[in-house]
Amino acid sequence: MRTNQIYIARDGKSGMHVLVRILSVDDIGKDYLPIDPDDFNKLMMARDAKSLVLAAHDLGPMYISADILSRRTFIPSHLQQDIECGFNLIPPDLESLLSECYFDPYAIPDEIAGMGYRAIGRTGKKATRELIDELDFTKAGDLSYLDSQFRAIVEPLHDWIFARNLLSILMRIGGLYRSGADPDTILEAARFRQVNPMVLKKRFDIDTDTCYAIPIAFNPIYRMENLADKDISFDALQFCPLYGSLIDKKNSFSRTAIENYLKGPGNEFVKFLAPLEASRVKNRLDNHESHSEENKWRYMVVSSNTDGEAINNQMQLANRLLQAFDGILFQPQLAYTGIKMAEIAPERKPSNILEAMWLLVRNHPGYYFLTCKRCMRTVLSGTQGGERSFCSNSCRATWSKEHSVK
View 1 (cartoon, rainbow, N blue to C red):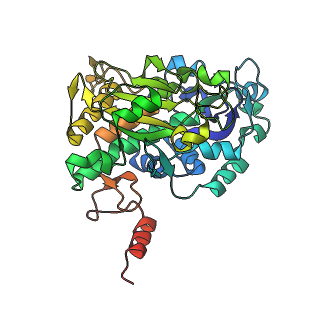
View 2: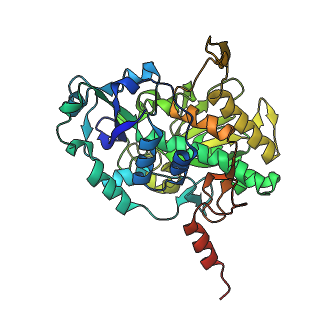
View 3: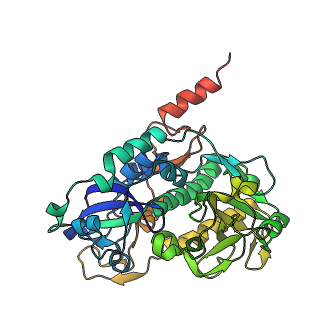
């Protein structure tokens, strides 16, 4: 499934950015080939919008499900002209795009009570500006010459970032454990923040046991201006189908947060929490500024109470978290195929890029999880050349400089 070209644009309805992938008609809906570890590592190493989009280009389409593609696949010139497409694609916006692009693990717990984090590292403004200059869909020129043999597929940027960050977090736990991290504090070592139940009750009116929270993406409901009606009715399935495929369709909505629970029996201990605050209604909802370091993130929150049983051991809870996602992303029902030398094969194949990448994450012979000693990014590292401690020569050199004896 070779991508002919990829572009960036902004969805005028949601205000969020999207990728526009130009794909051959013959390749649409084809089964995923095994994910190349090098292409996978490009995504895991991405820390700015440009590097993420280029990695997405190489990995291939986000969806192959006919149901999702039917609502996101268009004749290229029709999408440009907004002919019966339902999308109003407008030029990308630099500042908005920068705010949407949170890349794990570039945030650390903020020195405030609650569950706030603050971003660290470079902003990637130069690379993001280059991305807009080079791949702005609204300046792509007339694409009608592609209409007969290609289609334009619209993919939310938020879904790509969410998939990348989710895998980054789950792999980091494994990488740290393999390298000798204390299992009793493994979640905190992986940059989860332990959150007191009283904080969640006071802040979000959520009754729960002790939780561990970590930012997983930009909060799509967050606005610096006043809350708009469209924010309250934000439809994850419509705007972010990949994210929507993981959550229970029943949302818990309060004055201060939207909770989406991980789907599947027994998985209620995992939720995705989006703070919902604005200054529109005085004395009812807090102002953004009062919790600015909390409101900008969508969090993955893991409760220490699973199936009514309290779990105090962080490694045990980490294993339960891994099993919950594996049960959703890996469903290898077998069937007879009638194909020579492959008479029995999985009946259900990956329907999106996250499921395809998960097959590599859970089974990667010849590779191991390497969590960088300096930046905490986790990649698949080959076994040749001995054990490594850094994800790149740049991180190795920087760490050596920072720890050199003066």
